[in-house]
Image (cartoon, helix red, strand yellow):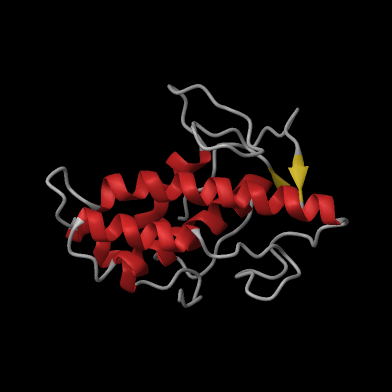
Length: 174
């Protein structure tokens, strides 16, 4: 059984492209509201559930937060592929920074991994809001992923990097 997001209550949560802009425990500037440091956020869920969810070929969406969980699971898969050849934390950090510098596509643009998962933006303002949110959440996920993909001594954690070979919902990460 696939793990779903616990963020099902959308009351008071802003949306862009049908995606809830959930709060993040983040120091990175962006449109996401700030969450309490002691609470679990969507990035924590994505990293915690990644190794189980990556094995599923189907993912039933039970809430809009599940769509964000799907996107983050795919992003973690992409990030692990980039980290696969990096033998030190310094090399991994450089690879993740380069991934973060890439343009973030939004629904309706070429390169968006899941057409139909989110609705296309109704305006340029909504597209930029969603792009900035995705950029912020990707940067936050990257930082937290480095702390689990590499041990404290800077060597790769094979129990995480082995998952770079997996395809999530039959989508090949580049």
